[in-house]
Length: 81
View 1 (cartoon, rainbow, N blue to C red):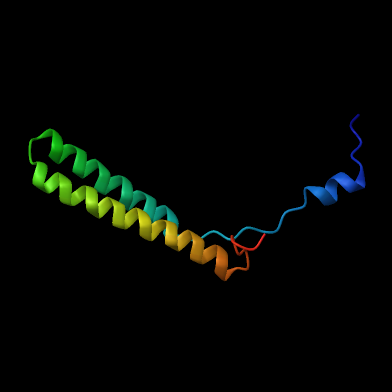
View 2: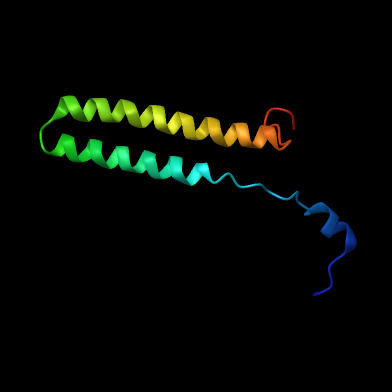
């Protein structure tokens, strides 16, 4: 039971993944803007809260674009599998 067939090892062999150091920064920025927006809504400043929620969407979109761009740059085209 503890022996692994050679075919199974070939099946689960993965390529080396590259990590972009800017992606965690984008996630942290998204969380920060989200927190600031929720705090401003809670304090009653709905206009500032709305602006911060829109900013969150922009930052979150930039983070996703950065992830897809990094994957495409290193050869993992997500649309051609």
